[in-house]
Length: 260
Image (tube, rainbow, N blue to C red; front, side, top):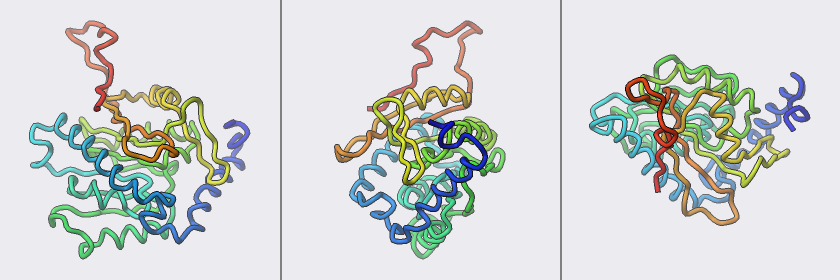
């Protein structure tokens, strides 16, 4: 499939330009209902589930849950700033937004202006990057969490791996990736209209392995309509599995934590 779709530089350039073009033509989508494809009612269960997951991660990584630290996040595929406004900016002192569709990013800038926020003055949207994910190299050592939601399906496998390998250097010590995505039952589902692919859980895990990432925790999204794809949230770490006294760990030691 990838040889057919992005098998040479021309095809790959066309794949990405058509993917961005699909969203650029949809100015009407500059609303929560629009960016969620007419399923605006899933915003609440989406944010609620992500918040519970994020709280668990922060509690695991910091004794105080990160409340007395200057935390910084990167929101990849940020769209109009839905995830940043409803979740990330409440927990992180700074959030940078990455979005290749310029009119979405301008809407995010407006949505996240100080007069439209009800958060502490110490919390803000800092940088707005209008750059495609496959071309972006984040600042080294800046982020506690890099949040990637509903956008990685636009990347071909080689660019998926390249992005995460580049972005590992942008994490602070102990930092994590959070990937939240639609999940195919098996293999993949290709969408030729918006130039994206929905991967299965096994497909993702193979790519994580190629990236040198370990699954730290994972969670199934609940409360979405049955006709939609299943959704999983993965917390990923570049840290190697821990060993006890230099010994090879038992197989069960490194199983990711599953949040019910």
